[in-house]
Length: 269
Image 1: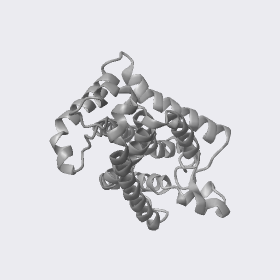
Image 2: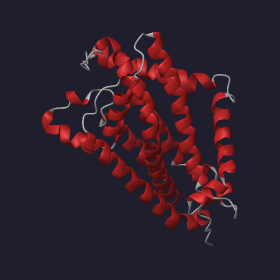
Image 3: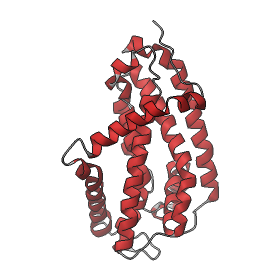
Image 4: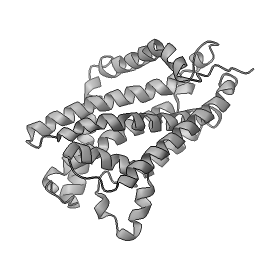
């Protein structure tokens, strides 16, 4: 039995915006209010993770990020790169199983399935904005205030959302048919994390291998974040163009995956 209930245009999404917001609000409420230590796991835990990486890479291994920051402020360098990664990683991981977890909704005739991975992406992004606000406060406390160019992040946010949503659509759609997809995605994300200059500067990569790291679409994204937060130059403007093109390819691919596979979701679930 086919179950064709796809949203095919921006107007359709606009029509369902209140339903989308209800999903996002419910997720945020569960994250921050539904648990007595929800704020701890959502905000403090990532800070502990960054502290651990700072200790291992900065103190134990003595990673030198160069510039004016030095080893002393490695945590600041790390946090600026972790911000977009944590949002991307969380959205892809959670969206990979969202259709399975919400199978009762998916089977309803009039429910727009695409809202499920979309609300996960939006919720993860809002969580990133909260972390970004906390990060800005930390920078002020340690007397290393962010540059005014940080406002330029607003121009990169739409691209980041589109890319994440594209991957979320691909992974979540395939996982309905191949249930190991979520596990494979988690393994790929782990490798992807260390293949991205987040815990180390791109300058630490040998010149003979650096071009391969620039193929990674998240490399220019991290570069843009750090350049805008600290007011430094981009390593390459071509990288930003590459990231933009890659984003639209992934987004359109994700939409096509969803359109082709979603009519069979109800039967497979």
